[in-house]
Length: 184
Image (cartoon, rainbow, N blue to C red; front, side, top):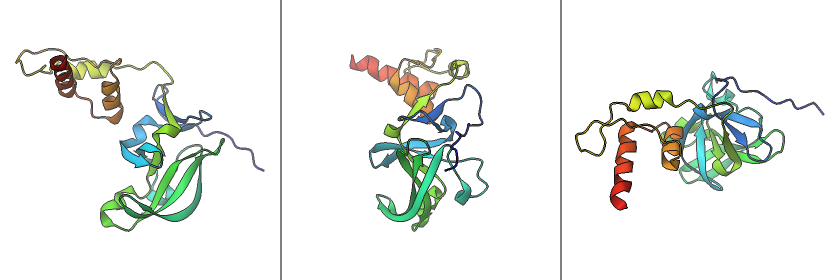
């Protein structure tokens, strides 16, 4: 049996990664997550792309192995998929889309569904949100016409989710805060 050496991700040394919850093997960079709005077998799931793959058929995730290709009827139609598992603990993490019958679903080919319950977000270094604060400096809060600096609140779970998904904006944060203020 050949030795199994871990693959290491090539990214910024402080960039967040998704890791197997069972053995903590690195699976992908958080920046590879395209969407968090997908559903897997066990609930919420991430759609992940391999940006370095020259062709969708050659896309891979670090420290995973692919099972055989099987046809599967999913909510969005008929697809050919291959389950992917952690190379070390063999936990099934999700699947890779190999083919899609419907034209509207072909964008998924070569991408991966990873179950959010099977991976965890890991920050390997200090997280610097200064770029977020700088972008927020000119935001308008609550429609009052008063210019107010809106900074990212790392203690707010909704804002963390938005930032991770790449949709956080100062105006969205200001609107959400204003709604919460009116509810209480």
